[in-house]
Image (cartoon, rainbow, N blue to C red; front, side, top):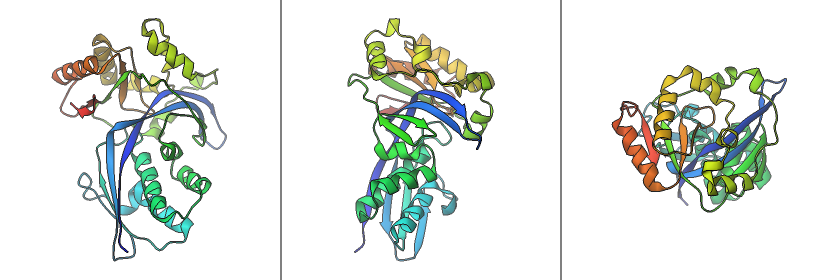
Amino acid sequence: MSFVEAISCSCKINLRLKVTRKRCDGYHELDTIFLPLPFPADDIVIREQEDAGVSFSSPEFPDCPAENNLAVKAALSYAFAAGISPRWHIELKKTVPVAAGLGGGSADAAAVLRLLDRRYRALPEEKLAEIALELGADVPFFLKDRPMRARGIGEKLEEFVLPENMPEILIVFPGFPISARWAYQALAQENIFPDDGVTAEDYRTAFAHPERADWEYLVRNDLAFAVWEKFPLAGIIRDALMKSGAWCVQISGSGSSLFALFPDTETASAAAAGLRKSKSGNPYTRIFTGGKEW
């Protein structure tokens, strides 16, 4: 029987990202707080097809070879682990910017694993997590799709319960991608060290009393130092958002997207509109807040 499965894929920000050590195999261990966001989001549809294998299409990437897409790799990995001969077509509508620190590709891969397992129920949760980690360090988090604290290289996950009354989050993609490889290569050794980390209570207190919060500590991102230095536009956007009433502004993940915390949707929306009208809001900039793209 033919089938069609569809899902909307959350993106993420790293509310905090501390690099705790560099391993001898070249990987970096982290202590990071992942926060999933319902917008911006990619949309994925999987359809059964007559031809064997996994095919791929995307209006935004008409010439992208299927084998280069992480969603396709996820489907093939699931098929291999489950002993299924795949006959699937994956259609991707891409909204999350690429190489933007928002986890779009990882979210797509996790969504494919979830969709296929919803259809076939062929693999235990532990096996799905194993496949996810093989696909990428952020993919296991997206299988959970709720706020999580991640340690190790992303595989050690524990639930992180944030308050229900969250600030409004504004995301700005400044129009250029940043390679995660570059971000880690540019990471200065003096920024690699463990600390005590943060607790959910730290954020509850900060959100209740933002004027007294130590935002530099609460939203620290060790990968951001090199981004601020190399890309002046990021700093210009940060300054504009702070002048518009943001509590704090930080780089998400390895960049290049910035996120800002605002007291409410109205203030964030006004900041988005102001940024769009400014020189920083060039045609390549994408701004997301209040459930819309500005």
